[in-house]
Length: 459
Image (tube, rainbow, N blue to C red; front, side, top):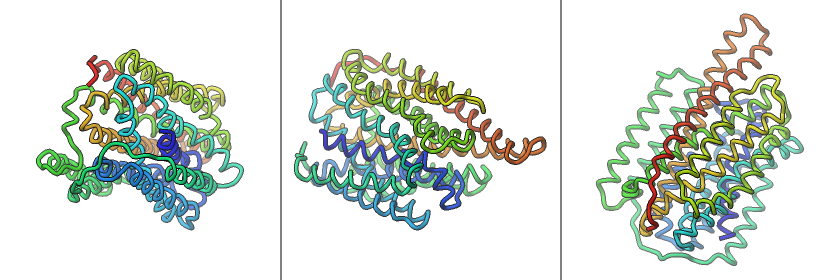
């Protein structure tokens, strides 16, 4: 399990390493925030596109074969990104990284389900939470230090040797779990899901820089939605499925997925807003921007295993409700920042957010998998992780798009009374605060939904 957790840790660490480095990369390649968000968005999207394949891949190949192949692709993309001479090559490297990383977390989830009985999975998944939650929270702190002391390329030079080391340990120690089946891949499903999800995200991302009713926003969004609907129809009417939608026959699985959608929208979008506030509005250095997230990362490291044990004892309903309440409080705190907010206030608000996150995420994920029969857990893991990744991508695109539009309008209005420098600072602050309030609404919705979990016997 340690090898799988280490690989997942590196994959999720890599998701948020770019957040604090974004302003530096924007200056390096002379790009906008809307373009820069693709460093995280593109990664999460390709990750989300790859995950539907994992239900097939996990059943088709051995654990060793699949894990080693995924980690090698991950390492290759990391090296390309580190040496990228242009922004296009950097994005390409990030997407190659995601192609490998997208397989790792679902593989680990299914392995945990095979290794532990249902009433012990919460504790095991709590340790997995160190990878799923601690790594994304720790990423900005590491990123801030390295960007400040060296440059953004060092982020890739740091992680590449760790990936290679994990590959070596996996080649020596990793054993196979489960059994293999000779399955036929549904290529049309792969094409539909990839094009549909890609078009949807492109439409959302363009909303920050283009008119809402333009073909680049509304056009791509509607096209993506239509293709995704076609994909869902296809998957429910053929025998050779890419994703098994029978997992949605479980009430608690449905609730866990919907709760997670709103959580991920608020989480990933909010994590990208904080560095923009710290560096572009408050003019803190990258290292201080990263340090503001360190207390929250440490809280996750302590709380993830504890929340796993709490789930085994009490179940998901009230634990996840309490976690979302805490997350809501932290998000509202960040919506109250100003030009005079102290570093301690910002760090405390982010720590409260991460405390809530550590209490809610692994319990709802474990509940989602525990509510399914063993035979379709690979499909449930693929479905859950796909929606998690895509929700994070869409949430980032949506919140950054809203922030960009608000910022542009605010600056234009403030320019009539203030200098460009002052108008930019105040306008950016107002846009960030409003966007955090929207993130808070997402958290509130997830909070209310947790009350719909049903108590049930283990399958």
